[in-house]
Length: 417
Ligand code: CTP
Image: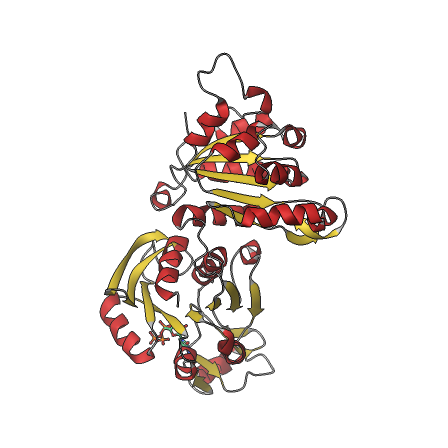
């Protein structure tokens, strides 16, 4: 019997809830992270089955995976049985709606791209017609070896496969370099993207500039003007675009997010609107499209104070010494080179659509996505969103409640040059 997910309201719009996901684990020490992924998938309401190669079974417990997935865990020895009317690899390959292979070791990669079916996992990878997310992990020198390079290149050409190359960092063999498997949070994000969008890289060859998060305008050494934006919408937009093949630069204010969500992005952290404006001036010319998701503060102090104000002095200060922040989005629109597409965002309370129409006309960007910030399932600090997209095909489009990644995918489709 499956347990009920903790938060059934958010599961209603969770793209992974109810999906049949096969998790294939091969022999790399990164396998020890997979129980966390399997547990997270089960908690999100996915149906999970695990398959381990014999090397993986020496690194991570099949018992733990069976328990976390609420289902028997499959090993090579299970592939052929006189109790089963159909081969297990065919059953599992046809059962799966999505496949995650993580970690994908050099050996399992080699078997796969050369069509060898001598393990249960290798047979499933050849037999399945489901989309596959493949997250490689190897030692640095192995990753650089001509054989692995060539095999990885071959995998790039496979239909239905979303390959996630390893990141650089400290490896279990004590080397620093390429080889670390994408972190669990990245695997979950990429699986969700695979479910929502698929493996197609329609943004390949395009450069996207995204802003995210709040800006923070200092008043004195202990106080500032800012807002509750966490940066989640912009960061997910950037990641979705990266998975769809875009080269993404993210200019972001102070974020309130798991730093692992930034992995793989070229990031330019800033604090103030002035710093964000400088970054945009520098980066705009090389972008094919821009998504201005940052919640830029509306006012700033002409000159931040060097000394902390007393409480009494604060009241007088708040009514003087502030100036409006220039509209960065309007600046982007005014300076844009031919062909550059620009998406603005609008944070609205009360009536969304009428305000959004006026803001879109005022800002002059190609597209404007307006979302409510006074509802529990949209806006700041939540995983879901909904609203209106102005300027896309068909003019005004209602984007129904969905995960922020689902909204991001729709915005990317509309924004693509
Ligand atoms: N924006 C900007 N520069 C500012 C303020 C906002 O570039 N100084 C951008 C935001 O990044 C967003 C869009 O303008 O893409 C709309 O931001 P929003 O806060 O909704 O609107 P405002 O222009 O600030 O207007 P208001 O606060 O009156 O709704």
